[in-house]
Image (cartoon, rainbow, N blue to C red):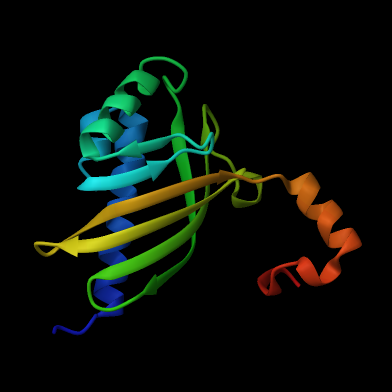
Length: 153
């Protein structure tokens, strides 16, 4: 079994996320879908579950032609963790926008990507997108300070 070169693999994974962002910005659903495995799962912040690259591309083709037309994608990677040489989990904050890019503290979604190496290329095997509710986070931390994530203490 080959060892993980975290510097090279981290750069490759960041490259996949850049491809994803650029495809979104062009409204290119096929290129967007191409960074996912054939059997990938994609859970939107609405809770919609898409199964497979074709389903992910088709849904984004429709979205890029309507409610997401002209939007861009912001993604701020929080961390990348490796679980063996061919599996990685990425946590990030992200959002869509038009016009001026959003700052990292303005991003309203928290995302989890699971990437796998297939035939030497990193691809997204699973994606989960969750809408952040910063007001409810603040209220929770006010009444239950120990619930605040250690990274934010």
